[in-house]
Image (cartoon, rainbow, N blue to C red; front, side, top):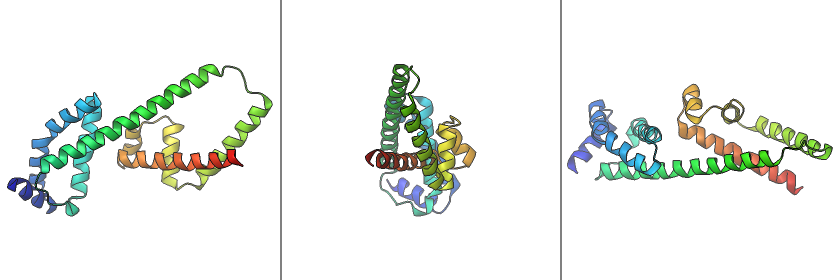
Length: 183
């Protein structure tokens, strides 16, 4: 316990050796722990790397904890569960879209074409109102088909920021579309 407090204090003071010691001690076990939850080694490593990145980035505001290991395992568990839930939603949505496309092989009638055009216009207007980064991330993900990690690397931001901006954009679009259908 005393060593955890000492290590955290050193990390808060930008001691790279202390950070490396914590990283070396916890990285592999945390990856194994996350792998048990996610059933995917690459995703687990990404979550653990992101955690250590956030710790280093926010080192000056780190709380001095009595159990560093408990904090790290708890953070990895929470992030892994959140990541798994997000992937589950994405997979269900993709399966639903695939089913809808296969059921809808006929071409749209003129009324449907007009509604599609109106909705496309609404989406374009809504995207134009968004902050530049949100719009750029959304276009990269939806139009260019890039993965969150690719977008994060291209824009030099975290994967979590990409996820947050996509979520914010989808909520905005949903609200606009609901307003359209309710009017």
